[in-house]
Length: 151
Image 1 (tube, rainbow, N blue to C red):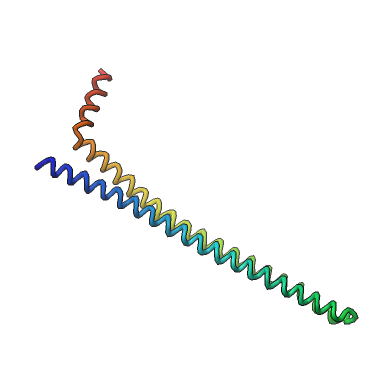
Image 2: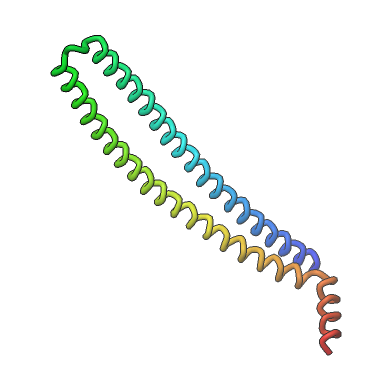
């Protein structure tokens, strides 16, 4: 009966350890998925901004090329385009900073969760090793052999 209880305890400790590893892997997967989504969103925003700005630059160039003698209108259009570009660059920098701040907060929370899961896995592994050593007849023989070498 004692052997059955020992096997059950070892099995329970093994299950606890593996559950902790699975939870840790799940937390890591969630963190990486969140990072992937954020990276994709940032990449899409940047690509969209580049394409839109290229089109605007080409349209401004066309407007100026079609009316080369409209100096005043062309100067106003260039000044407006430069002002808009500066404003958009500042907005993009603000968005990028906000995104970076939010990402840091998410990563901090994710790593905290992973750290907690790792602590649980380490505790479970310690208990598993203790149970395994207590219930494994080979470990007792090894322990006696090591003691014999020390004497």
